[in-house]
Image 1 (tube, helix red, strand yellow):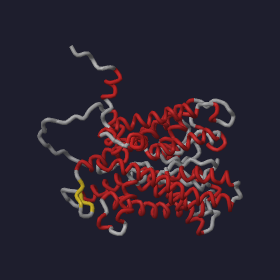
Image 2 (cartoon, helix red, strand yellow; image 1 turned 135 degrees about the vertical axis):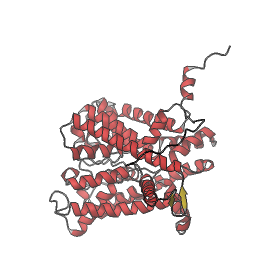
Image 3 (spheres, rainbow, N blue to C red; image 1 turned 180 degrees about the vertical axis):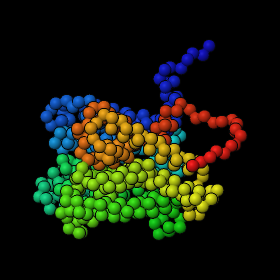
Image 4 (cartoon, helix red, strand yellow; image 1 turned 30 degrees about the vertical axis):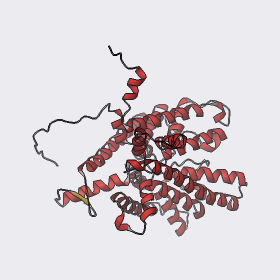
Amino acid sequence: MIGRAPAWQRRSSRLRHPAQVIAVGFGTAVAVGTGLLSLPVATRSGERTGLVDALFTATSAVCVTGLVTVDTGSYWSGFGQAVILLLIQAGGLGIMTLATLFTVLLSRRLGLRARFLAQAETKSLDLTDVRAVVRRIVLFSLASEAVVAVALTARFATAYDEPFGEAVYDGVFHAVSAFNNAGFSTNADSLVGYVTDPWICLPIAAAVILGGLGFPVVFELLRCWRRPALWSVLTRITLALTGALLVLGTAVLTLAEFTNPRTLGPLGGGQKLLAGFFASTMTRTAGFNSVDIGAMRPESLLASDVLMFIGGGSAGTAGGIKVTTFGLLAFVLWSEMRGELHVHVGRRRIPASNQRQALAVALLSVGAVVTATFALLATTPYRLDVVLFEAVSAFATVGLSTGITATLPPQADLLLVVLMFAGRVGPLTLASALALRDRNRRFELPEERTIVG
């Protein structure tokens, strides 16, 4: 008689889908980060951090969000800030990407299961190239962060008279945080003090855009940037919508805040454009701010909600539903309005499975934001536009805040923790991770149309 398998083996057999392992991986990273940030050595005062604050900060770092309940620069010690920086890097690259890299370095071999896990995290389209893709991701990320860190260090040291060691630390911290679209800053007011300095704002904005494009798009551009005809649908949609949203967001936010005396009003013409561009870029899920978000007008908050919800590119460090999801839904709508049976992007036909995935991600995301907004309205005294902004910022892993995060009750903080985790792992990934197995119908039911609209 064959005995039952051990409990640990039965549990591990349930984690066969890469999405499940990715969710567990991120959860483990959050748990480890929470434990480290709870240590007395992690704070400047030497006192233990409360569980909710430690959990919130660890989740925000791993999920590269940037929302904080305590000030990063003044509350956390050097050890605590180093932990946050490592969590940001791990979350940006992806837990499974790092795990795959370590496997390659230690054994020079990569099993089929590990390749599937890395493919799910990096969105690699060719399973045989996962090992090379992971290596390029890590090298490209570190190189990009190093370039931005050098530029910021030089500016901090020469223009703001920071000691060289402090300038290097601030440069590296902000470069890693920017490329990974995290938005953590060692300054209490984020980057408000540099609102008119293009030598600070533009390198950070460039790092945010580059990290948010997505690694497949970046690598394809490096490989065939002179031959746009060979670009994939992913690259075309990502570049077109990224450029369009950056320009549109800059125009809308600059015009809406142009005469606001608490944001762009006191600035000159060129400075207003710089601040508007920076604000638009940060809604790509970066989380830095060079003006007071809480002082923005309601129309600016609403425009930011839309931009944050859309987010950045797939398989990058950005959050949101992704520009590819938004773009596919736009093409689906256009094809439906024209009465076409299939959805085409350029000279390519989009399969129905892609369309269903885009719709599922969008609807699950809307449901998560609406539910969280309702709960926050019921548990806090803040008005709708402020609460909605906070919910979208958490779910889209942006990190921008109107200033209410630190004043929220513990139950609201825990709700934001769930939102940040779900937004980073992804609505569709999280949903599939909860399913124990795939279910395929062995038959088809008769078709019947229903009234729509």
